[in-house]
Image (cartoon, rainbow, N blue to C red; front, top):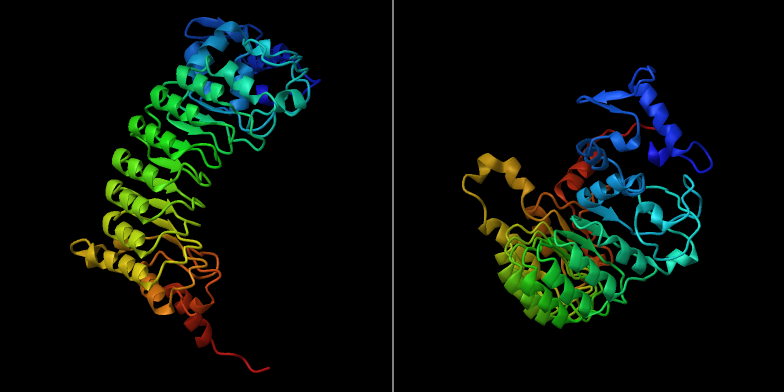
Length: 412
């Protein structure tokens, strides 16, 4: 209900009174819960409060933390997920005029707060330029955070904010710092020591990180399962990938899109060191050759998604190796498990602009992996820009064509 309160409308106390009247059947005597009469916001038991907070969105949770000091302390201790991706909308909200309303020290001047959509937002110059200060204020309070999303359109985060996160949020498991190109290796060093339990890290677009910093991070954050390095040209090198393969054996998803320093040595190190890899995006990694794909086919038997867009050194040899790995690793009695078997293997493949490939090799791959579709609405085999592959079709596309041709045409 807090999130639905409109600026200039009912205040917080009036909303609470209405809620209590409904809950008490309009008796006017308050609501009893475990012998306690709830007549004010502060009377709600902390266990119930934390349960409610776990079900609402970030905007409501943060506003709720401003009801009283008890709620503030409980929510700051109990909140495990927080998204501060965008900015606040300029408006008034329940008479809030200061960041002190949330129980935090003001880190910048502003006149009002409002909520919209599913994220906390600040939308005027004073806040747009101070997201870094916002993080500096919040991180020491929300010490139990497990998920923190700081995705930005206008990069503001600096190393001191990430260092504060690492200092106070030791339970952090998922962190999104994408497009934070002001960050340097200082941030990676801090995360390495402060957040060793990270399982998901998105630093796509963080162009100032180096492979040395990324290598250092992997020495400590060995539980990583999802890592997004898209566009991290200086960080994503063969040296860094060798460190990932050596230290992050639990890795399941890796995005190396447009990291054009990545070569066969790095990808092969990944293949040998991360056998549970499920998704790998190598789009724009122009240096890799068939050797990379062959290593992945032989070592990463759980691979489900592979992106090879614009990898023009990839030839039929790579396609046949993927198809052969499917046959080589057929489970026993696979005929009796055909439905389950069909669900295994590649389910998504992007070979757009891989102009060296021929129809026979790609068709063999398509025939081997039933989940690869070329039919309308199910394009999980993407071949745009490969004009010589127009004859490649999945089984259902062929069947649809046959069915269409079998329908008798009426004379006009």
